[in-house]
Image 1 (cartoon, rainbow, N blue to C red):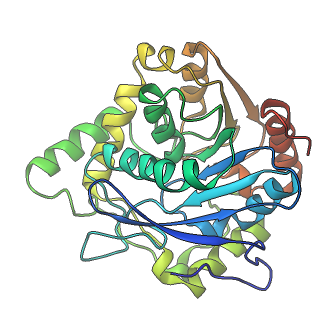
Image 2: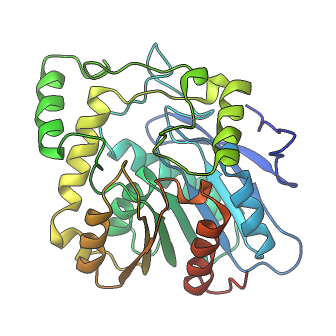
Length: 314
């Protein structure tokens, strides 16, 4: 599926689309950009749940301006990658190992053969947790990682992780893993109003995301299934063991949003303390999607990124 361009959100120049096949036979969409002039390496943008490449055009452009090649892909079950359920708008995996397969296939098929080193990762939310899981097994995968609002525990909008894990596990044992949680439904695009949204305080960037969904509804994903929630809880439970953080050998900067209600800023702070070569900053006032926030908050993000990633000079 071709990348969609929009009047106020055009595809950055030079996009090269690719198809990636995972070890378990799932087709993923990927894209690569190369800037003009001397290359400083490659930044791999790793999305959160329910996101697509189109959402990150602005970020791609900002990285190209910094002299980095950029590579990204859509997770299985979202964006323009393959979906396995009859209802394609359900967000679903049975285990986060599936996401690790996606990331490894992207590394082997796109990053290593087609992109210049050194390799850096810029991951959001669910993507941050998957990158941490992979980093334990492949400590040479990336030179550095920048994780924005990584999913290490649920935020204030959700019941406790223990309750969700127990309930989702019980429903999954009853064969209901592909179903949506009780009371959940897939909202239509027109229902997603800006007021009270937990993702961003920037109305222009919020509307830009909605415009993508209206123009390409097939890219969108709704609520996660019970099995997805159970898989996420198991992955977060594993990450909550202090030994997990201590085993990561890739220098990592974790950036938390001060007003995050989707994931827990406290869990991010705790995890960063447990890392041997990790650090954390908090952007006050920011909601969950820091990269889609207002310019002053994004400015703080880019200042931290530029100070952490070698060769980045803004």
